Image (cartoon, rainbow, N blue to C red; front, side):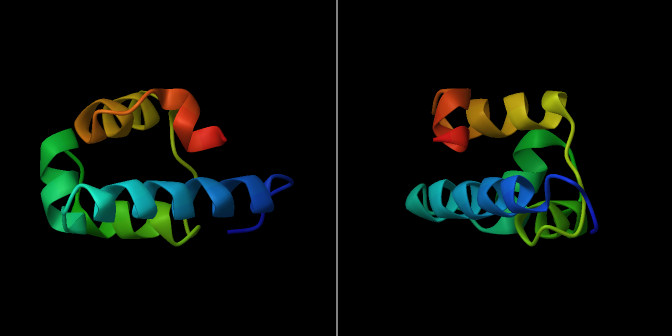
Length: 72
Protein backbone atom coordinates (compact mmCIF):
# COMPACT_ATOMS: atom_id res chain seq x y z
CA UNK A 1 0.00 0.00 0.00
CA UNK A 2 1.30 3.42 -0.88
CA UNK A 3 0.09 6.19 1.36
CA UNK A 4 1.20 9.45 2.89
CA UNK A 5 0.67 7.65 6.21
CA UNK A 6 2.51 4.44 5.37
CA UNK A 7 4.51 4.38 8.62
CA UNK A 8 1.42 5.01 10.75
CA UNK A 9 -0.50 2.16 9.09
CA UNK A 10 2.54 -0.09 9.53
CA UNK A 11 2.73 0.70 13.27
CA UNK A 12 -1.03 0.18 13.62
CA UNK A 13 -0.80 -3.23 11.97
CA UNK A 14 2.06 -4.25 14.24
CA UNK A 15 0.12 -3.12 17.33
CA UNK A 16 -2.95 -5.07 16.26
CA UNK A 17 -0.84 -8.19 15.70
CA UNK A 18 0.88 -7.72 19.08
CA UNK A 19 -2.35 -7.41 21.05
CA UNK A 20 -4.02 -10.20 19.05
CA UNK A 21 -1.17 -12.57 19.90
CA UNK A 22 -1.21 -11.40 23.54
CA UNK A 23 -4.84 -12.53 23.68
CA UNK A 24 -3.92 -15.88 22.18
CA UNK A 25 -6.00 -15.33 19.06
CA UNK A 26 -5.21 -16.33 15.50
CA UNK A 27 -5.93 -13.95 12.66
CA UNK A 28 -8.91 -16.11 11.75
CA UNK A 29 -10.33 -16.00 15.29
CA UNK A 30 -10.04 -12.21 15.51
CA UNK A 31 -11.43 -11.78 12.00
CA UNK A 32 -14.46 -13.91 12.90
CA UNK A 33 -15.04 -11.89 16.09
CA UNK A 34 -15.19 -8.64 14.12
CA UNK A 35 -16.92 -10.04 11.04
CA UNK A 36 -14.21 -9.58 8.41
CA UNK A 37 -12.29 -12.14 6.38
CA UNK A 38 -8.99 -13.59 7.57
CA UNK A 39 -7.43 -12.23 4.40
CA UNK A 40 -8.57 -8.71 5.26
CA UNK A 41 -7.22 -9.13 8.79
CA UNK A 42 -3.87 -10.24 7.38
CA UNK A 43 -3.79 -7.29 4.99
CA UNK A 44 -4.47 -4.86 7.85
CA UNK A 45 -1.69 -6.32 9.99
CA UNK A 46 0.76 -6.42 7.08
CA UNK A 47 0.03 -2.89 5.89
CA UNK A 48 -1.43 -4.02 2.57
CA UNK A 49 -4.75 -2.31 3.19
CA UNK A 50 -6.05 0.76 4.93
CA UNK A 51 -8.57 0.23 7.71
CA UNK A 52 -11.75 2.09 8.63
CA UNK A 53 -12.38 3.53 12.06
CA UNK A 54 -15.33 1.19 12.41
CA UNK A 55 -13.02 -1.82 12.02
CA UNK A 56 -10.45 -0.28 14.39
CA UNK A 57 -13.15 0.17 17.03
CA UNK A 58 -14.32 -3.44 16.58
CA UNK A 59 -10.73 -4.73 16.82
CA UNK A 60 -10.10 -2.82 20.06
CA UNK A 61 -13.36 -4.08 21.55
CA UNK A 62 -12.61 -7.69 20.55
CA UNK A 63 -9.14 -7.39 22.09
CA UNK A 64 -10.61 -5.72 25.19
CA UNK A 65 -8.27 -2.73 24.97
CA UNK A 66 -8.88 1.01 24.64
CA UNK A 67 -8.62 2.20 21.03
CA UNK A 68 -5.86 4.58 22.13
CA UNK A 69 -3.52 1.64 22.82
CA UNK A 70 -3.42 0.90 19.11
CA UNK A 71 -1.98 4.37 18.50
CA UNK A 72 0.55 4.61 21.34
